[in-house]
Image (cartoon, rainbow, N blue to C red):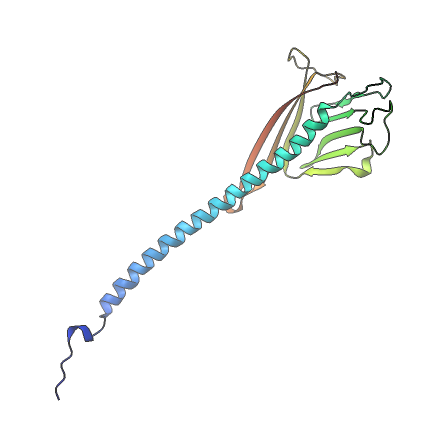
Length: 190
């Protein structure tokens, strides 16, 4: 019995196996490169979104509070600005309309930067400063009058407060992403 081995029965040659492995390696390298790029992009975009969301939330809280600065319907609570520097704002608003700054009602509020943390201090109590936002690299307050002219020194009754804040968020191997937000706040109770 003489059996002939046909072309289809012989399998692959060493050269064919090496060529197939090389092509597979090239495809695998391309897939890994694409995956790696997408992963870095995802990490960066997530950091950007986080920074944007955090800075907007902190800014919205400051804007809401600063708009009420000077609220003093009875004229006896001393409502208005206490400190207005380029890096801090401290003000009083008679939120319960009782004519006095009542402890525990958060009627005196201060926003300032300590290191890289945006802090909110309420009721002039140094022990209860709350961290609103980390990784803040810049915070500035500019005070304007009704004609948009900048007020210098420690102005006691600005009409507009311009807040500028920059946040830096880690973005993996890409490094850092930075987001800056500026808001103009018109004071309602001037």
